[in-house]
Image (tube, rainbow over the protein chains, first blue to last red):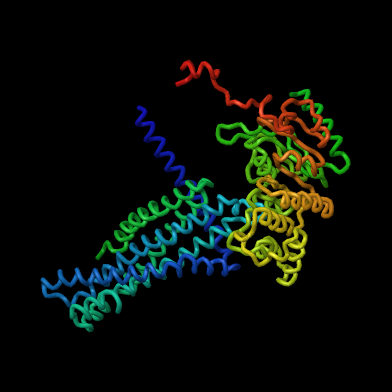
Length: 261
Length: 285
């Protein structure tokens, strides 16, 4: 009986948390239109979560592209289908690995930083001080960071995909190192990647992932207990919850977007 | 306690009579989790005066400031700010009232990514459409008032604890509020910073015609500048009156508090079985 009660308590705890975080998200969304009056706040945050994440995304993109080309070439060469290397690398990157890996990196780099920053602002009374100055922290601090994440993730994912497929990544290994024909590499990509299905998929998936990551990060930071342990837990929770949520959301989105192919 | 409250009420009324009260707390009950913080307190903050709230650490002094400013809302009892029940205000109305209050946090609560200048300019930029030149004049005027005009380009991390509180004070008076709440302004200050803060609180209150609430457990400093004092313990007002009334309070508890005695109504030892019984193994294991 006590076990049933415990499961019930845990379930209601999770449901309560989901409800609170949804209400928090609605408060953020209600404040987004006002940001058009103060675009500088969003631009600063795009720099912080986007530009400062560039290095890790670019390097990861290059290495993922190279590994895909290397392993893909071996598999395709067995069937004499080396010329399909461009297609295989591009499809895997554009449809799955691009948004997912960028999302995981973004959660680790920008999500954790956001949670720690907001958690520390709370612990040092900066958020309470702002409220006492009649400034709503959701409007001034949280909403700009959420919107910045929403904008930065698709851009970072696009850069990741270009790096993985292009000159430094898959192309370098496939064409320059393994000797696949350059025209065949590009031609395969051109004829098999559709704008309406694959390119828009990058933006849709990464936009959803960006929203999930920043939502989790700002919620965890804003509700972190004002102690060093609380901030540390909020940072860890952000990376764990956001990463799992991205993987789950990716499965659902792939099932919906590519069910007919 | 009822008798005590009755005598206290007559003193409060007499003290507040000339100008009326800006804040009135009535029959306030408040719990934080399972812990009772307030169990029916009445407090009046008279306009134009410095009212001190004193009591040991963890007794709920800061909580009172959070309740007055509407950061937390009491389940039972009322907190009136200029006649408005703070707990019942919508966020828009509450923010409108907060523009009339300033609060000096114990940590200073300066925004760490902004310079001293931008911190003081922050409320002006958020709430007014003043041209930048005018904002500059106001910021310099406020920083001059706290003696830190020369520190305008420093980052909060470069300030000492006392300087950070003075910058926070300049920011708190940027919008010319009617009331300022000071949360433990003297905690951890060296004697020079302490003296500066004491003079600033008194001067700002008198020159700007502010109403001040000082929450503190520093007896000498607080009794030195306050016009009226409330002493709180265990969720109740133990005594209140002018600093002289408090110095000559008949309450043993108040006497222990202001004379810093180690033992008295508040025992030195945390409640437990007798020491000798514990040594003989008869206490809890």
